[in-house]
Image 1 (cartoon, rainbow, N blue to C red):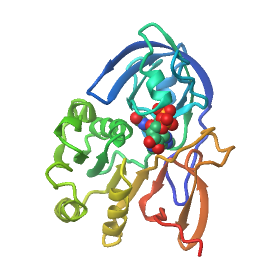
Image 2 (image 1 turned 90 degrees about the horizontal axis):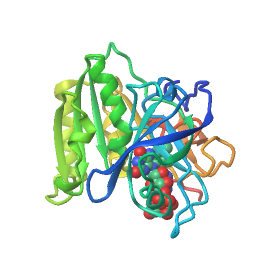
Image 3 (image 1 turned 30 degrees about the vertical axis):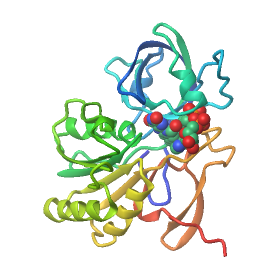
Length: 282
Ligand SMILES: Cc1cc2nc3c(=O)[nH]c(=O)nc-3n(C[C@H](O)[C@H](O)[C@H](O)COP(=O)(O)OP(=O)(O)OC[C@H]3O[C@@H](n4cnc5c(N)ncnc54)[C@H](O)[C@@H]3O)c2cc1C
């Protein structure tokens, strides 16, 4: 079920699960953490990079229509436990933020593919920003459990937005932080840092999520390192999340063969080298 050339997908059983809210609290001014519990063993069938479609509740102020896609932030240790870390940004997530402990929430999944990862890897490099931290956290946990060395480049507006503790969750990693506030997150500065890290550490794979700018930068850099695998978890707006509505298609270049692929179904994890940044229909 890992990302393969031109998108790959396994055969996880997708279903709707009614969950109980076990824990729900603000992590900082914009992000909330929620832990859900199901009678079904959803943790055992969920892999890093996969996501669920969440049925956000109706409230006095909000009536979210579609389900909202959310990456799995954590799964387990109990078989029925699953966690999300989310940015309270609009109608759906504002409504979700009102859920009380012991309340209920319906989720549909697990959806999408997973990162390509091998326990035999020596080191991975993870480049994350914003909600990308939530998506990458399970990969960090998977790598740490396998004894694979981790280098993380975390990009944020300011130190207040960083969520380093929530990202690493106790895993040992060499962490490099860059911020908009002091200019260290500029493309030029991050390019120097990433090239230094890749040159010195030669990671087996580079993973990214949460920033189109970082994705395009990595695509350019990895052009000079053909032996290093690169994968991105894409966050395209989507409706059904199951490959039917086609609202999340994006153009990919699979060895010169241009194809529109569904981020929800063939992704959300894709090889960085195959992403087409700008579409020219001229
Ligand atoms: C596969 C996948 C995994 C995701 N994982 C997470 C996660 O772990 N944590 C998290 O906080 N968010 C995640 N997102 C983004 C999340 O789905 C949206 O923020 C959410 O749907 C917004 O719903 P809303 O009703 O609150 O906002 P809306 O009112 O729909 O929109 C509010 C703002 O959010 C932006 N937005 C809406 N949908 C998306 C989207 N799909 N991608 C990027 N921006 C969007 C809009 O452009 C707008 O600026 C993920 C998206 C995808 C596709």
